[in-house]
Image 1 (tube, helix red, strand yellow):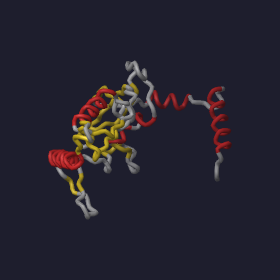
Image 2 (cartoon, rainbow, N blue to C red):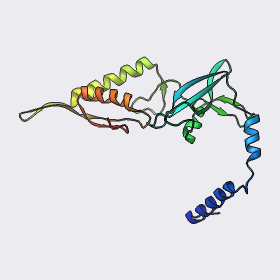
Image 3 (cartoon, rainbow, N blue to C red):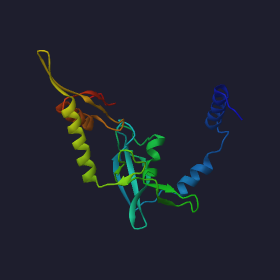
Image 4 (cartoon, rainbow, N blue to C red):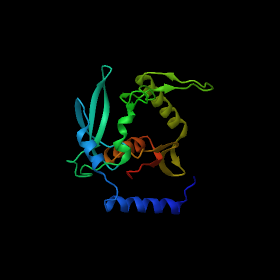
Length: 200
């Protein structure tokens, strides 16, 4: 059944009105949530990883198969930014390390989670695991080679000292501090094509 935008708005308005005026009884849901609180063996205070808002989160960890995994995330009520509220993306960020098994309904390590760098050689269709040391070394070597090949010191009588062969696009998850550091790094090697959501 195809639902038009108008139908969607009608259904949403009717549902919202029903919740507001008590047509739908939410007490069973509340009772279930109170009777089944999240359980974790340890917790840590962190920051949401999906945007530069910097919302405070409480991360709950449990031991699964001898290893600690994130199994629950909730908003931090002590954070002055979000005061305990949290978007659906950050609330579900436990899925970065664990997922709910379809068979048993229990949390298991996410089999699709990448835990080490992968490298694909030119002309190859397969990915090979490499160490972090090798990955960082190869990235640094390629950045230096690209900078050396595209660095311009002067243009006419002007000193420009710029590299036009590299562009830097910062992720939306970084806030002012890492954006500042990325900006300093990129400008120190002469990059002029630089943009992040934090507007450094």
